[in-house]
Image (cartoon, rainbow, N blue to C red; front, side, top):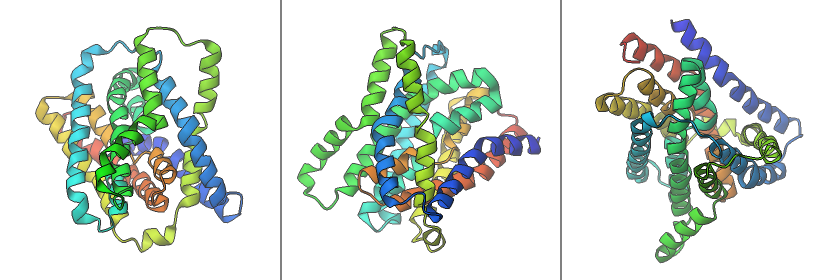
Length: 318
């Protein structure tokens, strides 16, 4: 039982770890530099990730409306944990410019990649179908709330009277928000996605994760991780322990059991999304801090997911 959990977590997490390490290596040998990472991150943020989000939603008629309560719970719990982190951020993070990075790192899960892979390994095609509905309900919130917290904190020094307007502009102009909205609208139209459009889109989408992970690895500051101010560790502890505990316990209290509760845990225990680094860098924030949070949670989730699965199965509630 324990070895099965360990094996499945390793098979999902190890490729991400290897891509991060490859980014570190390529930076060391000079094949990637800061200018390349900046340009590549802009490419991912404005093209590859929007394509990934659009094509994951457009034409994805999953037919799992019976699991709507799970999707609603996921959306509600995401907002609740976001607000909790927003409340504690001023107490844990002294630099206002880093509070949004702390919040995003703590609540934004890698559901589109690692989360669905977890579901496939744990529950097969049924898990993927249910997980896709859950993902669709939360991925929009991840991006909207990330834009809100980053825009607000990174512009903390500006005139506060313009804060709300800047936040709204940031949301409206954000490529990830636009792609999700278009994907949902296209899916609602029930129109098929033309093959040429689909094939081209999926080729572009394929750039998103590997390029984001390589740039993340190339931007890692291992010395900064060892001598951290604590922001990265606080955010990582929230992502790996506090948020999964709150969301899973809340789901259990709500009445979820079996596969739905397992999906709540698997999605909430995933590492911080690689897209968070891309967004922070593109918006001019502390990209090294964002990269360190991703690295710590990617390493840490390898262990916390296995332990959590073992305990939940041991207690016979999933």
